[in-house]
Length: 559
Image (tube, rainbow, N blue to C red; front, side):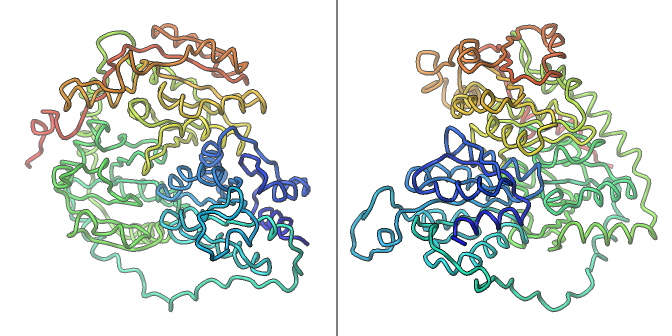
């Protein structure tokens, strides 16, 4: 068997049946062998970045490793943004790059380049992957595949890359003699998990709060979380990555989060953090303003513990295991009744909902999304881009019935939403997929619209169009004396979206009033791809910063 065929068989053994990529000379053999299996579908994108984002989203929805492939040189470098995105959001992904002939890439002659499109991509991405290697020995292909898969999926997941030269791909190997990878020996049986301090703190707290992050889903602990919430009766808020985890939560806390969630964080006396890294967009530049609560932090990555709050009760553990232990302990404990505390947060939710409805001219984007929420079906997947649109959707989104919300969080990459929607739709074609984006994010990867037509993907693309980079313009207003360089209408604008939809053979609607939103029910229900343009005024607003609103001091609980 040749190396390329072995790679294809390995992917099938890991339940990978879709590979995203962009064809090129250095990967023709790999893709050819994948197709020959009749078990792998190759999804041809229009830019390698789109393929990388699609593989990321595919992994999030399918629950298996996502795979993207690209040719050498510029194909490989075009993957890098997607590689970093998967790494920072802890998404198990395998990136495979073709490479020039082995002699060219390994020649030690000091030349800048020996062949065509040869580039040492594995060294370039070493700092932004869990594992990256140039495969120089065909007999090591089994070892390298198993090693890469192990690193991508074990512990805190992330991105890995294998760079495979053309002649290595064609090399014949004896499958029965290939060396395998042996995972590191497990540590000696750990001591029973000591949760005594954490459980005692939960019993003593008057206003405890659970903060859930994306690590809950990565550890497959959703059922255990639901059980813990039910048994404890403790109110739940989330990070942006955890917003689709709990149906009865009080929204997401953070820089542009829900006022009620941020008030809850500031007034809690105990904060149980589950699988969240407490990044700056979550807790701000001065974490002590975010909360004065005692903190219990459970995470699989020891480097995240005590990084922001040095005095926290830090528990390094797989969340699934930790929650199972905590649930068993709760069965024999009686926690205080937190219904009064829950009612306080619920009242804040109603009282301060207006904080996210900021537009006084034209359409209010949060109101638009709220009107669209009933059109989302059971199990629908929502993808967001980065910028004002991401926060508007998060402020309006209320998860129900297995729905998912996908975001580029750690890297915060514009251009994520559309290819992520494609990856989600390929992963589970029967699910409704809605991609929200701004005009800026759309234009970074708008070439991927062609995939909607070619593969007949019924994705609804909701484009908030204010003909500018809205979040940047708002920062320029607040901090740069209204010096709108790069965001002036004379410098930046949006393509005519109606003509764009026609060019790509997509349906089109333009929304200018809330009543017109209500007429979209059938559009959301059918199987055709659409661009839905939401026309906004130039200076549409997104503020609602928890570190500036006066209500946070006014609502401080001192009892």
